[in-house]
Image (cartoon, rainbow, N blue to C red; front, top):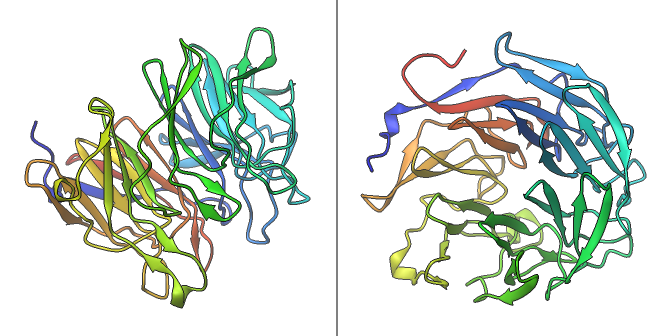
Length: 354
């Protein structure tokens, strides 16, 4: 399969947010993008819900969430958006769960989680939400696996994950829920486990090759997981150790590819936008060894086995939220010294997006 050339990828600036935003959550229903919550420039969680309208290139304010929150987990169940946990106005984890009906345009309170949690990871299987892990009010990670039934409005406990963690990456592939990485307190985890939704059992997979936080995570259409870049060592900016390493796990073989089979990125970076777009892995922005946020973008060519530079982002930033909708990558908000109101799209086609 041929992939687009580097000159075919275009960035276009879209309507900016009304104010800078970070730690917000993006969701899609029917090709439309919704933005939920997040923190403002003062670090306060917001209750806002906004819909981006490409027709008028504008943001439309919808009824706000009953509970202001940042870093919430979100699941789409039909035409409804389930919002789970996150951090509330008092900077503590939340247990409250709310649901927005996009057809009725209103919020409903739903059954709460069993305890307050932030950093929950969520996936949807057969119209049920699977919420994995999280961090409690005691700042300790959880191994809990909870399943939400929309019809009954109940959370059921499923067998817990072997390795407690929060901020893990989850991906549903058939009947298998893969859970990669995550953190324990501030320490990154190498744990990699899979839950079989039919057998209701966990299996431990080969550990991730290296410990890192704020890495990019991309699942391609062949069922391969790639973990890209990230921060190998914390601390201040001067002592931070960024990496450009790429590790890829093949779910068919059940193994991580050997290092000679993978290709490192051109630029060391962490906390960047990452996506699979038109047959290529794409990474954009983030933090590196430069004193400010990056605007550089690169894409992997699978046939040439090399990373190639794309046009830079219009707005350098890290900690941005991103989502792929109809083969287009939207990058919203983030941080460049202060929370950013930038909103731009990367797409492959000759005519303009709007």
